[in-house]
Length: 392
Image (tube, rainbow, N blue to C red; front, side, top):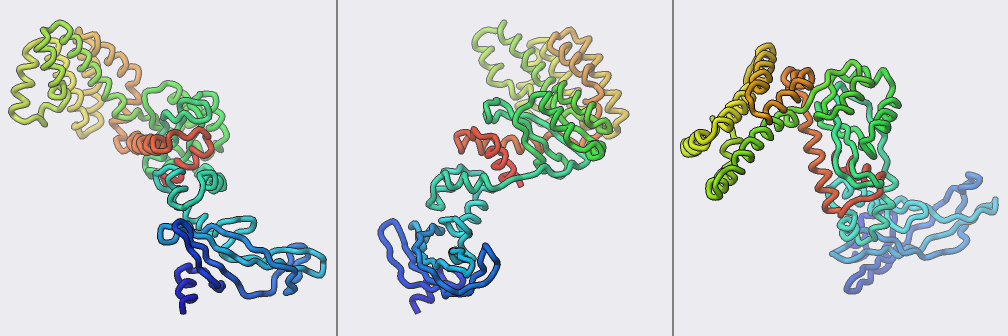
């Protein structure tokens, strides 16, 4: 009865539990199997002739918080052709010293955002073993959808500071991770994608990076290039903040400290402020004409997003560029010049507001967490596989 209970606990088919011994750290289960006819790997004939026995210790999943080893008495068969070979087992892969379910457990844990060291500790195996299992997993590039988003992140892998991520922003799916952001390498990567597949891409989303736009025009000629809303909207907030900082430099220490600590009142939407905050904002804006005009330009720009018709949005956007250009505030004049240079791509962001780099930025944040808890992953192939595992 005791043997049957241990067998049920192990959940292994076709084994006979002979003995269980344990120490303060380890549990060792001695197993045997019934002899069966085996197929010779050399000639394909079956044989039941046993040549000898060999004992092997196999690592299994931890049991009751202790390391678990299976002590298996393995048979070695001999065939008429002279070939000698070991018996096969459903729970043990060939040439392995760990159970199949141990490998499956590690592979499943690699999908979670945790370090290799943490997985190794949970499975009571070495980090090198976890990495060997990781190296057996590979991902091919999936086919492109009708939308493609590209961005870089600081990965510090393969002696490159930045790596690139390709995402389908509509399906919220990571397509691939590229080893660097070099335009030559990116061009070669996109060139290897069949042209008929590239022509299916209708939207290409990126930040305000000219090399990305040039690549999109060269390799995705049918795609509408969309600049992510966050990346052009922050230009307006940067301009407002620079106006505030310029003003603070001319203020007394006490007033400068107040404006610095209360800067969030200026950057928030005026309509979202409570009555007390609105009064504080009004008082801050009364201090300087440039700050007041900068705040009004910020509010007026954000109102463009609330306009329902694209035709009206386009008119409001072009009017805003003209007003900012004539404002006499150098920071907003610079912002207006930037918007004029990127007007076509920014207008696409208003028109196709369902396309953005939001999912890409979310994946980037997850990659940063993975990199931080792993204390960096230097080998790019392992880094790529971990990212694809944790984001699928």
